[in-house]
Length: 295
Image (cartoon, rainbow, N blue to C red; front, side):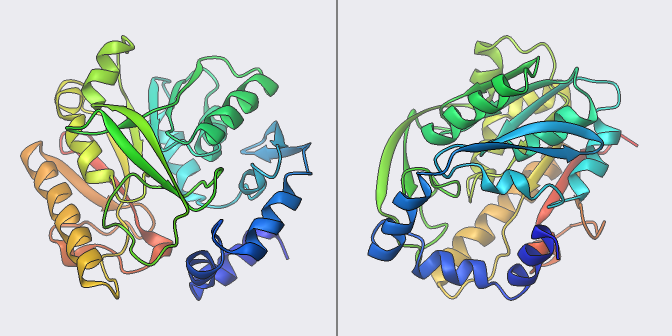
């Protein structure tokens, strides 16, 4: 059984989320011990993505998820079409480079721009880029926001790859650390770094998708990029969280209506017109926001 098959089995029954909620935090002494033990392990191995071989490091326990190369296979299918002529890909929530490697496996000439607030992940990404001598790849260590210049990044532990800067996205997760991170709008980022075109924007930022989408308004109006956006299932045992997720989803739909964008589930290919059309499954919660004029 492949690692990705094991991941899918546990994911189907939401076991990783129960495990995340009650065990994975620096507040848990057993997890803290296990994390310190994992820091002893650093090594490189090769992984092959879309026929391209990369050197994939695990550095003091960070980078294990890059070894599951078949996760989110729909991403490669989308990238083949979206990046066939090259272009610029902005990866908001770059994490530890899962999307970076897929992008470069499809078209190594694509300009990749990663944005990631977690300093541990940023350092890992820079090592990954250097190790593989990836050209046209840059990573920036800050956050994006529509109206704030400083955000609180909440983490379960220092190298947490699922940290969030969004209040009310989760209430049961036992965060142990808060880090202040600088933030700019998406439009200011594009201007400051003199990006001459924007072809694809990916948003996977643990609840902040609506806010950051709004911060790219001028950029989206000018370049009409394709946008990959995660919309977490709206249901929650917390009414506060459910209300926040519903309002965020409605905001995304309204934004797309105003800018004449279609919303399509990337896994099921179902079009979304009202918030009830959003998937209730974590296995299919990524969407393509596509300009209505694009075929």
